[in-house]
Amino acid sequence: MLPSSMSHLSSVLEKAIKLIPASYKLSYKPHPGYVANSGIFFNLNISIIHNDLVNVMADFDIAISTNSTSASVDAFQSGLPVIIVYDDSELNLSPLYKQQDV
Image (cartoon, rainbow, N blue to C red; front, side, top):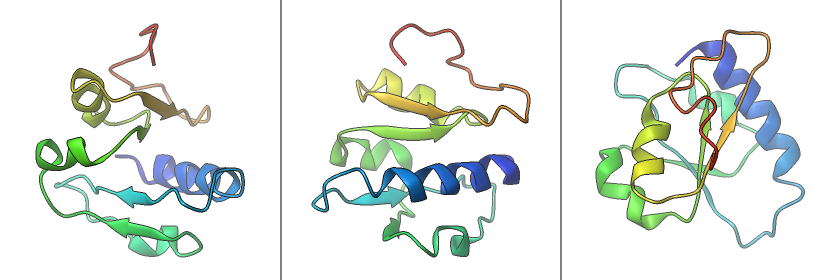
């Protein structure tokens, strides 16, 4: 996952969190090969998940992903609605690019 994508995602979530009900809980699953700076979500009440993605997807109602990860495909194939946050300053690397239901 590109660091700029993570920064953009954090910025979008900071704005969006003000618009969603307080009862919603947000979680972040870092890519296993990417040492994420958890401080990027410092202003947000987000829990960090360390379990394998396949083992936690059933615990969620929706997936929000950057456009630079294939984890969005796993979420989409599991039946979760997927929102891909696109950072238009970078090339769109989303494997779900042009997918109608995303």
